Length: 442
Image (cartoon, rainbow, N blue to C red):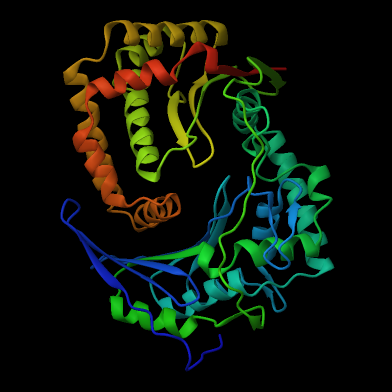
């Protein structure tokens, strides 16, 4: 990587979290890149994520290169992730392997992450990670090769009953929001992706000011700061870095109502599958309000549907569910929903049993002892996540892009009351905002 005497040294400021008994370090380079470091003394593994605040739903935006609004086909964020691994010298994963690192990447609905883990030669691997993300090698040969690979990936997911069950649920919940479209896009949409499409997305969303680097491991903050400063590039793609103006993104207007009540598909599975979803709204939520809602509804779902709940045990004992049953709340800045379900021999019976359980909790309220037990469980799970370098990194990335901080979640857990969960149940678990996705054997 190029170095420069003009690069301003990174200053990592310590932030002490009493409740966590952890110290994190945070700083920002002159080019806008946020750097977060969490030291874990005595840990063998070192882990780093370089992530962009850019995912599959970011398809309508103002191109940073010329200031014009453009609309991209579905699947570009995922396609770009694939293409960045291709370099003139070959696949950059081979270089990571030479230095004892395991590298990977992932595209979600609202972020894209590039990561590696290693035990030695951290600086060399971090240099490769920065090179991977900031030095694209786009040409027609690379694009066509990746197009073929992604077509196969789309076909593979089309045959996955769990993925179809999930995406069909989103298709039922949402009218217009791009979260209803597969992250990888469709065979037709990726056929529209060109090198210029990829360049527009990279220039706009992979600007350092729209990214964050999270490092976790047995390292010294001064050494991390020195390494990152050395790797910092004063230019992008060999051109002077453009001013980091806020990215203008656009989303279609989404009604509060659901799009379709029921979606059923037949696939080669041995058992039927059911997923029940509840659409939520996060419009006008501040980052703190979103974190509070996320925390409260996640606790509510665990209390109503979790393995220690009365409803779960009744359903399990009756044979309506098995260990595949789960419930989760997914909240982002522009969409939110709950998903409950799993394998079942009788989807209609399970659906009705879930609605009956919800009505019961609404009618009788939440027992204080159950609430405290679930809250204590969430406390333990939160602290346990700080024993994993990967868990720490993803938690830090999640809060950074949301605009919140990690200690707010603990504060929220301390101040939550069972009455708030009861109010969330009335507001969120509404039959009028419920869609049902079913997969049955062919």
